[in-house]
Image (cartoon, rainbow, N blue to C red; front, side, top):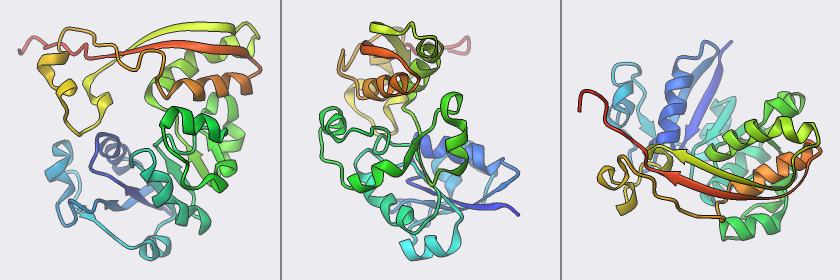
Length: 244
């Protein structure tokens, strides 16, 4: 029997990619793609690559309706808002997979420092399992609350984990990473416009990116004595192909 799935906050880039993957999954039936602002709008009108792939429309169901009709809930919501929205489903015992940063960090002070806010539901943090199957695949099999890594963190985790396990990831590590324009999400700003990004690198959050503490946390779980990461993220190296 297919698992009935809801994606909360499905209009963004993360939610759209999650929809694309799950709509093609043989063991999944996506029954809700939620959005208050786009309720009633066909999914394919917002995510053009899904036009004709699904007849699903965005909706804004109540918590009670979701608890009654789904088996798994995915959160594709912004940091801060995600924990607030997902808390009722965690308490109801429905497996929750969160794409935001709200449940990645076990230390509340780290969350406060790096995300610049108080955690809305600190009592749920101990229930979360960080999604790094290369280290904790057994825990993920039975987890009821899964915290997905950040995009930069995923690359850093895979790169550093072998060294952490070998006990040679010590001291400080210097990392420079690049990402495409989709990394900033669907909301436009001056810094996300293509003319400002194409063919160049624009470092931001130098030595202060919020993905750093989750990588250090994972390295420690693997036995590393890593003291810190000097991380410089650089978005914007999007180039035109031969079609212009």
